[in-house]
Length: 116
Length: 116
Image 1 (cartoon, chains in turn red, green):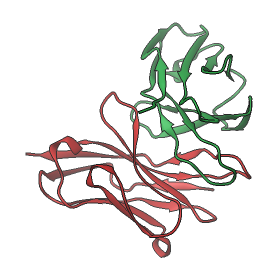
Image 2: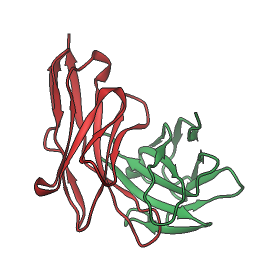
Image 3: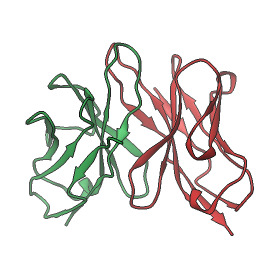
């Protein structure tokens, strides 16, 4: 069965420091991979996505992620974190069903806190 | 920029009552989804809807749940007889068409349902 694992429940980094949030997936075919961010009381905003091609994808707000098939990973990175990045981050796999648009399978999320 | 909207933002109801959560997807999108997020847990897929019928549903989406697209703009989720465990944030999402390509899902801000 498809699944997404985010091993870190909560991460704290200092403002200006680099960030890496881990995501591992289990999927039987070429995955569609996403990172969403959720600020408190807000909906889910798409940061970036991987469908195919270049394994390093750039997203909004200075985020990037690298798809590594051999490690079944899609880790999210940012070189310098800003206080406004404090939020919860969700990795998701797109499950395709025949010719229709499939549902998303989410990890449990990683809460990011930023120290001044 | 087009966005998915949801009403109400917060709904409080008594156990056993019926609730209807409303969503207005992005106007040219063809696929519609409901997800839920119980407090502190991951986002879970409920149902997807295309061409006026359910295309996929999860085991959570039992006979107490139904979805409808009553007109050209609204997409609703009805819970017939609410239970305490239905308390959650409910997210609506929509995505475009396009054959076999997978398009990103745009999420609304959510409706927080509290069942007393």
